[in-house]
Length: 351
Image 1 (spheres, rainbow, N blue to C red):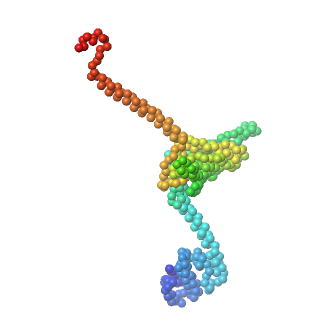
Image 2 (image 1 turned 135 degrees about the vertical axis):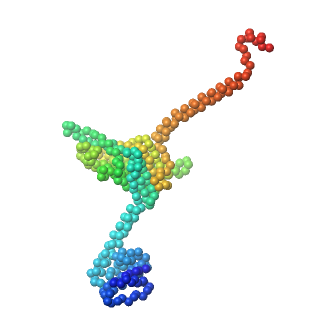
Image 3 (image 1 turned 60 degrees about the vertical axis):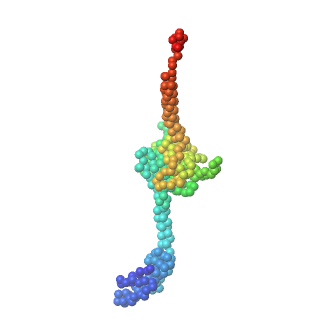
């Protein structure tokens, strides 16, 4: 429905209704000649499904330019605006839609441990990736010795800082988490894969951490002191298969784990130390809630070591209680029996 106000009047006209007579004293012929064709074109576009019919440069059906009474220069300008603006609007709309569909949140402030970080990736208003862990990198780098001739190797301890920037990507079989801090001087990328394999019980799916990439800049002065030939380097994992977990479960490991990365800086070995880990990159059923945990072998062994003494103590206590009960019952049964004297000389008094 088109409601196009006529110039200088408070009336409105509808596509199927007769147009009211325009007083000549309040509407110049030029104004009427311009406004009336636009109103009719807007009505035709609205009937054709164009939601921007009141703005001619938004609708393909309205790009024909102004009415014949307008100048050719205004017509060319209108056609140019009508040709460029829809493309710009499409790009802006796509960017806004992408931003609305994906959200990333750094919830590290909720952790009581200042060294532990919490990251959440949401798509379509649903949590699709959650990660909690404390991370630290041990990065070797070269510095000059006191004689300025020899090189010695120092080690930088780089923790994952709170307030880091993050990006994420969720997929059916592949997910990614990217974390950057200190103005992107350091960037950690985690790549997760979901796979399946055949077992005696049939097809079983699992997910794992398939690759790690750590980019760092030795010219950054917070952790690198007087590095020789400072610059950017990248450390990558080699044939990594870590955090293997059945599909539909989260991985949990409180114990510290060490993962080795190979750096582009003369193939130096960079160590990634992970602890207090809980990660789930696939199949999250409840918003902001991990699924059932799958504990790492180290945690399972430590849990067994903690519970084994308790189990042995309970078993030993049970054996002692059973022994006392048997002794008590035996003593009660034998208390009323006639005692046979051990000295045979006393047998003559019996009878």
